[in-house]
Length: 139
Image (cartoon, rainbow, N blue to C red; front, side):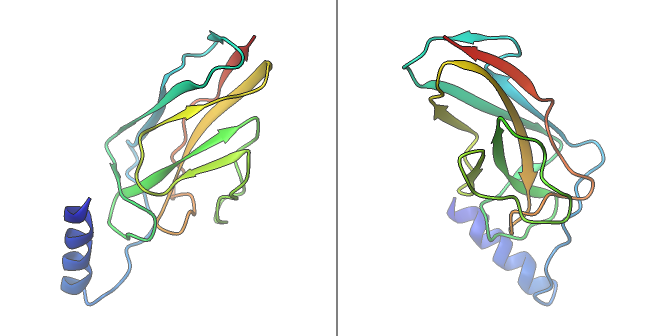
């Protein structure tokens, strides 16, 4: 993790301290590796959710580095408005330390999961980088 901070500081110094834009590569691809769409999971037990990302890097919140961001897991909600910070609540889970997986426990029923990348300030990139929305059932 320390290498990321040192590299970001070096790049900022070399660019005169200018912040990077929140643009994302056009070929960035974000996906949920597990669980899969339609998966049935047991109630009362946490389950692992792992995040996949191609053609873009992961950096912690507060670190402005070109073509990077951090994950946000959207649970039972729609994508937030473009250009605004991603909310932080029970439906918008932030992974600002650069995590690429989590344990999640949900009540019985059908649920949707979707990933959205945010920049160093939790604002979606341009163009936005988000995964396909999947549906899981907890019972």
